[in-house]
Length: 453
Image (cartoon, rainbow, N blue to C red; front, side):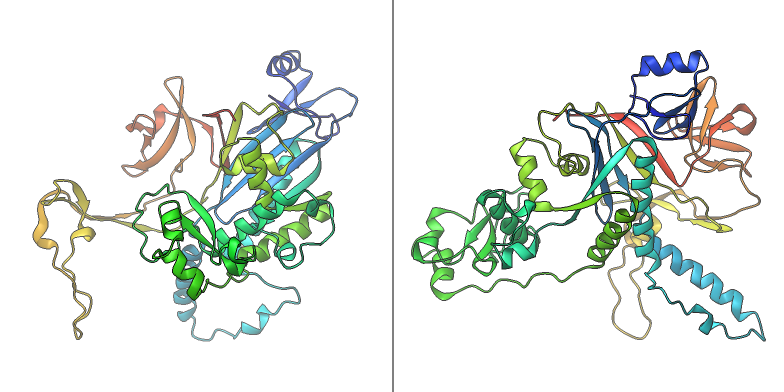
């Protein structure tokens, strides 16, 4: 599938690969960008488009997106947000502090930081800008007529007032069950609340249990519901002598709900910004989960976005999916330390020297740990400090052509005269490779879907 723009730059409906090849061959279109592959027409054409809905599964580390029409899915993928923003800013502030200490008569500039607008922390602002940019990038290649955002896992208003009106609140009793169930699982951090649980299986199935049995007048309120695994939620434990019977008679306190996190604030700010761009509505995680179960679709961020956009099992799914990764564009460190590597006697494996340290933490307090140096065997490689002598022509994740094939640059060495190719793990002289593309802040990697839902 190839995405198309009109002569005036307006996004049109995508076309087949064969038709796009003919347009390019006869010079009736030209390539705008390669990821996602988009062409622009050189002639006037009708600008009729279908109704396309963009579903976005907002998240802290991963964001799913999908565009759906009445009959099929046009694009789907997942964005992995860049991690470690706080550590990079801390390193930057340390360099800045040292630089400013060298100035003897520097004027105070603290008052210059005043701003009339609310200021977010840089790490939060980064997540906000990245997700807004994703919506704009999808709108640039597809005629999106509306956006649906998943802003929370559950609807607390419906829990407090089951008679609330609205289109999203009138879909039957099953919708309310999924809402409260998702709230309880979220509150209990998706873990069994039995303190004596012996179920160590990572993929254990969780269920919602009524503390006061329904046969004894227990209701469906969240303070009467708790999360248990299937090995603890058994009929034997419901009978006299079981711990569930004791909870029912003596009462069991549940944990309080988690307060609004910073991501909740970001989600609502994204909603407000998307409203300024196009028609935007919201949905909740319990609606997404119930729709995914009804349509027998496996859990993933892209599949959640497909359900959010209104997709069902009757829609034709996209064959390919995009995995978008954010890259750090520059690293200004002039030196880099490479730790020595040694053989661990206990396992026979190769580990870094820092993993087998002396255990000393302080000199004046008894906080020292075990001395692990005794487990060091032969030294595989010595530690060293590499000093940057100049700027390299290539950075990690750049694409180059070597012997007619495309490879990814893993790094450079030998005073930037050689590059290491990631796919074959081979060092090649710089003059033997030619550039294909340089990495950007975001990289769109397309790959076929492993399983079709």
